[in-house]
Length: 141
Figure (spheres, one colour):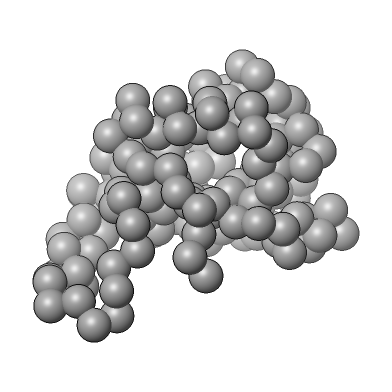
């Protein structure tokens, strides 16, 4: 938990369905579009894209998954275990890649927060996100 808390204070990036943050004063239909994409059946499309990115990154980095549902840490999970954890998560999963990068996966979210990725990981995520029709960007928080 100390390692996760420390990483949450580092620079955050986003794997997102949108290329940039929607301004608060936007005249667009962000909330309607967000509700449409957040529909239970459509949400699985994005969950599958996020899962694919995570599984592909597992080829390059060791991982540990922390479930906020039951406060359980699983080191070196199999790909099937990762898929099952994502599919059955009720809330948030923290996924540590190596020792220095944290992914926060929110069950009903339309993005993944990524804390402290090094340059090589950023290049990989850029390619993987594009392949899944998603966007990689620095968080604007």
